[in-house]
Image (tube, rainbow, N blue to C red; front, side, top):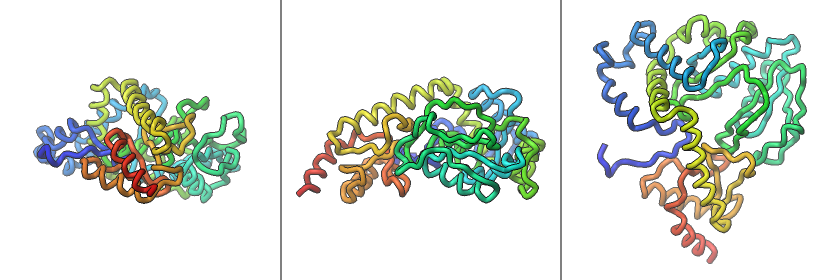
Length: 339
């Protein structure tokens, strides 16, 4: 790729993949190792792919220190697929089929609505006027008899995160396209004692027990996405692992929030400071509801400077990781808009 065509990609997902990983994948695209074919052409039951998926799991276990009594699954359907898979697999743990949902943003709200198809869902937070804060845990109305408690740690659309939560997790899932590779594979980490309680109507392809028994190869998995995820996880280990990624995230997000907070109200963070995300930073320009002219200009000018993916999800309009280039420019635009 020529230097003039390079861009800075801020997309939240499918997100940027490290260039080192892309170059390795490019080098192995036509002929993977000594296989004589591309990874895309490898049989999912071949010894070569078995090594790929096993190495990917091993790397993930090392990075996250996953206990031996948790299964790691590589599934399809994205996070939205898990909105159905989780209640189908877990709500049958108790006969009353109830679940608590901590609804703090768009994703957990959608997950709760999906779960209502399979059982009774209780929204445990006080009623929120908007998804800009997370009420203190002491105000949550938890049901001690609920089958499970659902919580979204990172509401990417709304730019919110709860950094620490004093509950024990039995299952974690994540769409790899956020920061562990390309779209197509969803990582699921589930405790062994939670397997085997799926509702009778659960499709085999999203049954955790079935997939665990077949080591994620009950059917053809997204082989190339698993391969890319493995490369990204290996890259992450070389960079210093999860702790270093956290420090990088803190440093970058703090720099951005400093610009927002010191812009004399020109940039507006719409999220309470106590639950600001370190990964997705939604903001508006000039006022909390935004300024159409300035925000459209922001996007146009950013693309001219080789920065893409700064336009956020429809409900929040803009998402940004780097504002510095635009500060002086947009103070000028603000003056024009006031006239």
